[in-house]
Image (cartoon, rainbow over all chains, first blue to last red; front, side, top):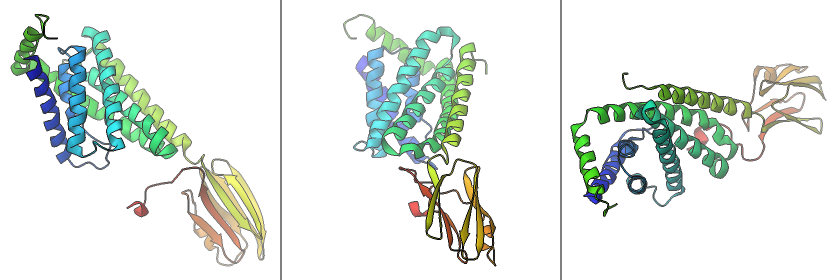
Amino acid sequence: MRRDILAFLGALSLFLAAVEYLIPKPLPFLRLGLANLPLLIGLGFLKPRDLLIVLVLKVFGQGLVNGTLASYVFLFSLAGTTASLGTMAAVHRLGGRHVSLIGVSLAGALASSLVQTALAVTFVFGETARLIAPLSVGSSVVTGLVMGSFAEAFRSRSRWLAALERRYRSAAAPGGLS
Amino acid sequence: MRHLRILDFVIFALALGVFGATVLWASTGRGAQRRVEIEASGERYLLPLGTEETLTVQGPVGDTRIEVSDGAAHVAHSDCRDKICIAMGDISEPGAWVACLPNRVFVRIIAVDDDEGEVDAGAF
């Protein structure tokens, strides 16, 4: 059961990455971050280990869809998503009831864009990459807010998600599975 | 938004701060890596593009004054006939140049390290 849910969330990431791929982008790094939604939603109920599994599925799925699996862009994606998930998990846990998914998502988007910009400056484009830093960070603030608002609204309203959480909890609770 | 909590605003303020910092970072770094190269009567001068400086050089028909300010360079005065060099205005991108042919003065921007300048049609 737990495995089904993780596979489903991974597949959802893959699907959302495909949807994202359809949306024209003026610049390659300006993306909405749709594929992060399963992570964002899973943050509320998945165990850390399962979150990592969804992260790996998301990064590989996105690499497959975008055709960047075998290029350095994949490493950017992996680093960005890992930084984002780490930050989101920390903010979610430490913030408790004082923070909504909007703040969590914003913090995650910010971490991701900062890490990717730092990588770009250090390894690939040199100092010229500092010119894209404001663009990258600025767009991540906007998309982080949009994704966070959606995730927050979705989590508070969706009965389907509530059912999914219950199923996950009952599968994970007896102790044997997780 | 009824969902917003106190920390959301804190994080948003932080995000704006980081954004401001990157804007500042991007704008201050600009031009620091570039130099103005001036060639006149066999001499070659190098000035950092980031400084405020005026240089007057001599040529066959008289003086040519080059001013570097605000991350750009231009010819401010020249004793030549047509003043085309003055009309060419500011240059700041690597590879851009201004010349005063009668006075044999050549001014151009050169990039230091891996500064490749702005993306232009040549990138495609």
